[in-house]
Image 1 (cartoon, rainbow, N blue to C red):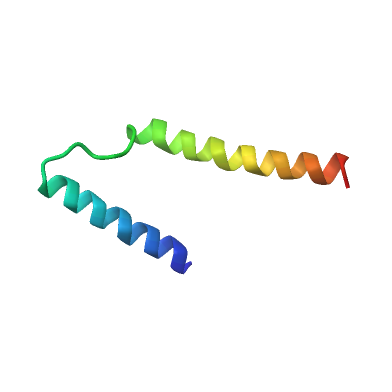
Image 2 (image 1 turned 180 degrees about the vertical axis):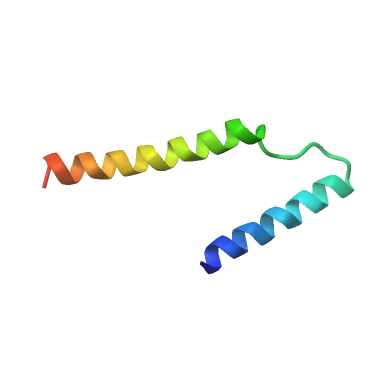
Length: 56
């Protein structure tokens, strides 16, 4: 849980800094970014499942 809160805090800090410097936000559009992260997570879980199911 502390990793999640730390990540959130750092993200907020980066957002504030970039906004104060009038720079574009260093993140993809909201839905595309969320789907990309979800895809990476699901790919990781699929790989682990395939290894455990077929090669152990």
